[in-house]
Length: 77
Image: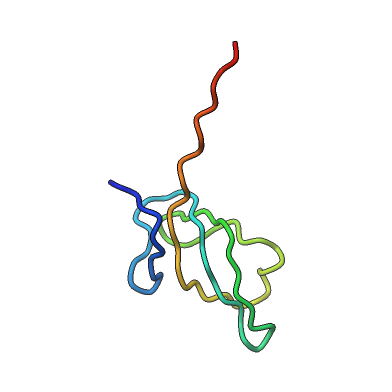
């Protein structure tokens, strides 16, 4: 599967594979009405590893995207 860097609307399409994704989300307007972006692990059902700061707040996932491939590191040996 070709992975692109376009943002995908969460309500229209969930990630199909488990793994790490960059997620744009909004925290409940009743609490602080802020937008956030963070990395989360998708377990084919839901995002895990939600940071403690957000755990007691209602988060609405808006968009997600694939992370870029890590750079190749040349071995100096």
